[in-house]
Length: 209
Image (cartoon, rainbow, N blue to C red; front, side, top):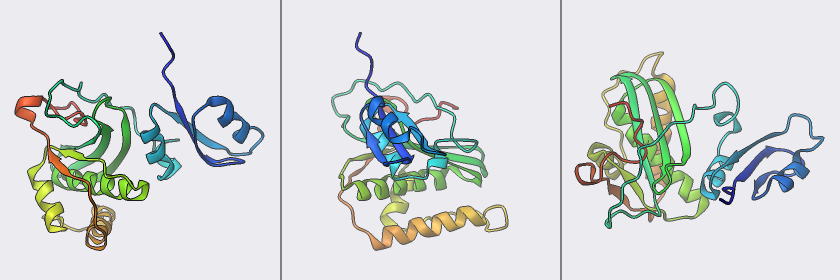
């Protein structure tokens, strides 16, 4: 069996960017003090990571790899897409969201907050995907299993009732930036509802139900 191809992101090195071979990656990091680099299973995941902060993928703050739901076979699913979902330990509680390649389940992005709600996570995950694809100039469809988040995106407003205090101030700042992005940008990406009853759990599901 052929070895699965990997893509390499260099955030700090003699040359930065996304590279499709380890040999090329090595040339750009060799003898570079403090080089920051990491491999990814797909070009899309690597492109997304390169647009993000390296600390989201390397070091203490890097997320543990999540096992996404196994993609189901269904003729109506658009496989060339991204699926997003959120999870919350309590509501409110520790909240995280992620975006994965619908066809493979490979994680493309992941964020975690000390205190939030599931609906906020669903909303931010969609905005994260929209902003990412805007930078990449791609009209990739986005799947969500949240009607509430779809409604908030349409209204360009996160209609949360989460109290703003010292513990939630940072998250409210992120929400404010997301709302501002929606009001300042247009996009062609379709935001599609994942049909959980017929297709099973969305591929970005955290598997905690």
